[in-house]
Image (cartoon, rainbow, N blue to C red; front, side, top):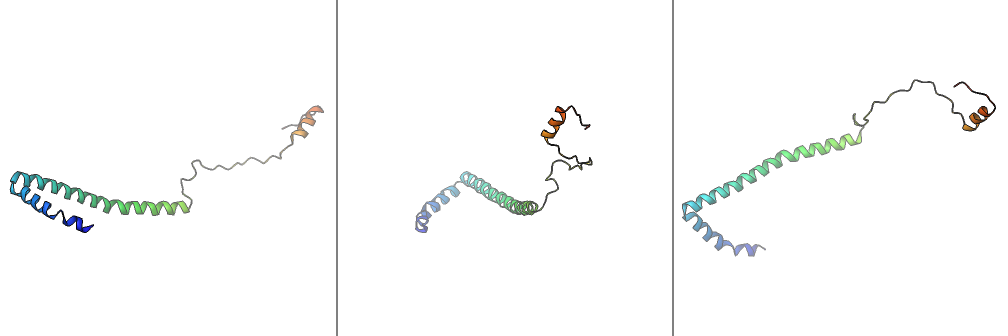
Length: 105
């Protein structure tokens, strides 16, 4: 694989000499190289900022997933203070109605 790149050395050397021999081509090459360097610098800065941020969010998300999150319940739990009623079967209620008896509810 490296032998293949050695074949490009004469092309790169002659191309560099041609570009730098004409001032306006040299200026265009300088602008292109500077744009590439600035792009690489911006990518490096983004990686330096984004990697710790995402790592911190992942750790925080994992930690909150293991414990109850305060916003896990969308509504507030309320306490029912009414006295519990005994459940009545429908058969006994229907039998009471048939006998003409009405229970006060």
